[in-house]
Image (cartoon, rainbow, N blue to C red):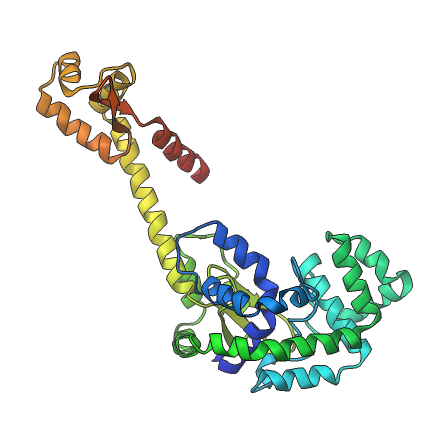
Length: 359
């Protein structure tokens, strides 16, 4: 396959899309998945540096919708060396083209409709001309405030564009300062992934997901006809998204930075979880250990009491208890000033819940 890593395209993509991912980045962080989230680290630093601009950004980046951001197929990131060049071309767009950009973004983010070519949006524009933008917005799942701001932008797209450009120019030095910390690492990984894709094809990506989402089989679709590879710090690091927009010769595959590392950690976690589940049920499957659990649940709390009830030596009971401890099925607690055994019901329930989720 023929695909080329675009260093400038990757940077420009993040510059114009980082705040579009805001809600997703922050929500993902709250889930505490335990993987290295360089995306969140970069974003948090930018939030702090750009705190005086955050209210202005809210005018263009609503939850689930970037009013301006992904300009494909109207302006293409790999066509520019610097962000200012794209902003200059954006400044030259007339109101009709700006409305097409706004509508394309709404269709993609809120209705899942991808506009691959500029002419593909024409039927939707015609529909809005017949029925009005207010009718179109009425059917979208957004707050009234968001709808009102979009309606204002639609009615005066050039003024909206001008204020957006001013904001992005002010934001650019802050972004470049933070991005510089990751630039060389992004470049090195992008070139390495490009080399592997050219040599081995789609399997490089599909192999990343093996053992995690085995039903994830859209690799060929996402990479088919892709000419450029973007490595995005702003995209979700555990999500790989194919961009099927614009001319075929300019289609892009966007992959989150540290996606591969994150998937390796997730795969190991899944393997470890599976091994823990197997260990858990092996202990339940052992008749002696099952009896010990039952007796502990009935109140027998010492090695001696268990040994007498089962006609076993205390050494044999200790051997089985060690396995139950390692499986988090039992724990030690205090009762009347004495250390006794107890069933770890919370841990057992949690393990069984994990098992049921996997079914």
